[in-house]
Image 1 (tube, rainbow, N blue to C red):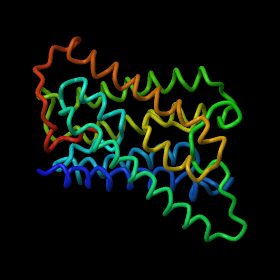
Image 2: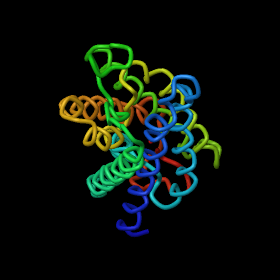
Image 3: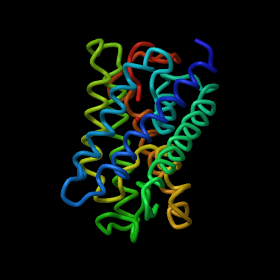
Length: 243
């Protein structure tokens, strides 16, 4: 499969993740009595990943997350020459999705973008958590997420269930982290909404690149050491390797 086709799949997958996940927060969770709440948003993120895992997994591996691409590269599951093209495609997909979501939301009279499902700490944290809490939870949860991905797509794992395990893992991660920082574990997902949210959200975006990359990188380095997998620099074709 050509790099262009695989990158296009990553763009589409990240677009779907941001449109579905962040869209659920912006459009469906905003009503105090009838909105879907934190649990609904968490489920939406998990469902977007689950659906894309079986849609583009056989094409690109369904990373749709720079931290996943980075972790898979360090685990020697993904060729280094494709890391930057994948990341660029993911960020572009996230920005396009955020633009579409902004256009939809702007159709409501009196719409104010506000935080626009972006990530943040301090005054931008739903629960008022500080920088240290946000950094720690992003590192730990991205580490755990990559461990699930690496385990579920291991050649020794049952075939065909990786997408389900990974989608449920992302749902669980959001259930834990939304009150802290709106949950990132994905630098592309954080970048798209921040562009439309405002200067304060953009000023905090650095954390939601650095922390997930650290967590994903640690998992990529440790998984082969801990579990002794025979590694290969090839995408996991037919198995979901993402969020």
